[in-house]
Image (cartoon, rainbow, N blue to C red):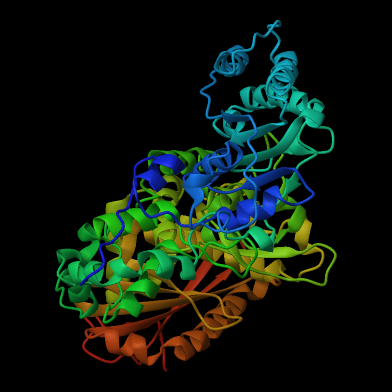
Amino acid sequence: MTEKLKEIRVEEASFKEIIEGGFIYVDKTGFIHKLITSKVKNYFLSRPRRFGKTLLLETMEEVFSGNEKLFKGLEIGKSDYNFKKHPVLRFNMNIQSFNSEQLNLSLMEMLSVMARGWDVELTTDSFDLSVEELIYLIYEKTKAKVVVLFDEYDDPVASNIHDEDLAAMNAKILRVFYSAFKSSNKFTRFAFVTGVTRYGMMGATSGLNNLTDISLDENYSAICGFTHKELDDNFRGYYKPVLETILKSEEYENSRLFERNAQEVLPLDLEPDRIEISVLKSESDLRDEIFRWYGGYTWDGATEVLNPLSALNFFLKRKFESYWMKTVSSQNFLRDVFKSDPLDFTKDMLSNIPLEDIETVAVGELKPVPFLFHSGYLTIEKFITGIRRNPYFFKAPNLEVKDGYERILTEAASKILVKDSIDERKILLNGVYNRDAAALSDLFEGCYKRLTPEQRKKRHPPSSFAAYLDLKNDYAEVFYSSVLYTYLKALLGGAVVQDESGPGEKPHFTLRLPKNVYAIMEMKYGTKNDRENSDAELDALAKKAATLVRRKSCAVHQEKAGGGLIKIAMGVIGRGDVKILFLDDSPGGIPGAGGESTLGG
C-alpha cells in the first residue's frame, strides 16, 4: 500500500498552521534548541528574503509560548527542553516609511498594539521610552522574562538604498529604537534579530552591538534552507511522481530538441524565458537537477542548501521555473541596485572581497558584493585562509539566480553598451558566420568605446585586495571579459553561455547559433606597454587566446556542433583595442567559411 504523501504548503502559513494541518515541515528545531540553551542569549542572523526567516521566528515563538504539543516528534520535542512559558514580543519590521515621521509613528503604533495585547498601559509617547516601559510592565505582570524577536530588522533602511538621506535618517531612528531594547536586557530571556544585511548601525556604538552574529557560523549554516539530507528525508516520496510529470512535459521535450540540435532557426525569440533542463533518467538525476536549479547556497563554504521557496513551489507545481527570482521583491531589489552603474555588478567583477567588507555594510554606501551576497544573488565559492584578511570568492548559487540576475543586469547594462541592438546583432552574426574579423573587431571596439572614463577605471583592482594579490592584468581582463559577456547577452540572450573551465582557468564563451553551429570565444587582455609596437602586442595576445581556444575545443563541443564549430580568439589591449583571429580547423560545412583573418589550427 502506497503511503500517502504529506501535502506541501507554499502560501504564507504559520508554524502552528503547518503542524496542525499535517503539511511538510523541514525540522529546524534542533538549531533552535542549541540557541536557546546556550549561554548566549542575543543573536543576529542574515539570510535572503523569502528564505525561511519568518517561519524560524514563528517556531521560536511557539517554543517560548510553551506549546509543547506542536513539537511532538521534532528534534526539540525529543530533547529534555522544559518548554517554560515566556511572554514573546515579535516585531515585523517590514514597514513602509516614505519619511522619518512615518517611521516614528509606525514604531509607536506597533508598541501600542502590543501593549493592548498584554493589557498594559504605556505612559509615554516616546517610542524609545515606551520600549523599556513595555518590556518592564510585561515582565512585572507575568513574572517571566520577555523574549524579543525581530523579523527583517533592516527593512526601513534596505528599502531606501537609493535615497541616502532617508536611509540615513531611518537608520538613526532605528539605532535609538534598538538601543532601548539593549537597556532592557536584564528583563529579557532571549533575543533573535533577522535581516538581509548587517548594517553599520550594528557596530560598536549602536544599539545592536550586544548580538552574536551567526550568519557565517558553520554550526548554523543550514538553519534556513534545505540540505541534501533534508530534501531526501522530507520529499523523497515526491521524486517519482514529479519525475514522471516532467518527462511528459512540453518544456522538457523542447529542451531535448534544442540539445539534439533539431532547431533550424536561431532560437533567440524563444530564449528569454527558457532555461535548459538536463537529461533526467532517474530520481537521482532529478535530485541533482533540483540542486542545480535551486541549491548552491552556502554561508560557510561547505554546507549547501536549497532555496526553500523555490523548492516547495517546484514540488507543488512539478515544473522547473524561476520561483524566487520572479518574486516582485527579488526583481525590484536588483533593479534598484543596478540603478547606480550596472557595470559594477557584472558577474566576474564580483571576485575577491576581504572578510570585513562582507560582514558589515555602511548605511548610504552601496557596495556590490555585500548587498548581493546577503541578498541571495551570490554565494561563497571558496575563501583563502592564512593571510591577514580572508578574501572570499563568489559565484551565482544556481541556475535560477544566474539566469534571472543576468537578464536584469543585461537589461540595465544594454542601455550603456548597446546603441542599436538590431543592427549590432546582425553585424555580430554575419561577422561570425562570414569570419569577418575586421567587422567583429570594430563591433567590440565600439562597445568598449561607449564606456565612460569612470567606468574604465573599474578595470583596476580595488586597493582593498590589490596589495596582496597580483591581479593587475588579470583584473583588467576580468573587467573587459565581463563587459563583452554582458554585451553578447544583450544581443543574443540565452544563446550565449559562459562555460566553466578547468581549475585555474577563466571561463570562455560559447555562442549557440543557427543551423546547429557553435562558436567558442576566448579573450586575452594586456596593457599597452609600447605604443609604437602595440599592434605586435595585440597580435601576440590574440595568438595566446588562440592557444587556449584549441585546448578548450573539447569533444563535447565538437559533438554538439552538428553544423560546425567556429573557434574565435580575441586580443584586447589598453582601453579596448581589439584583434580577432579565426582558427581555420572547424569541422562541418559552416556557412560563410573563409576569410583572410584566419589562423591555422
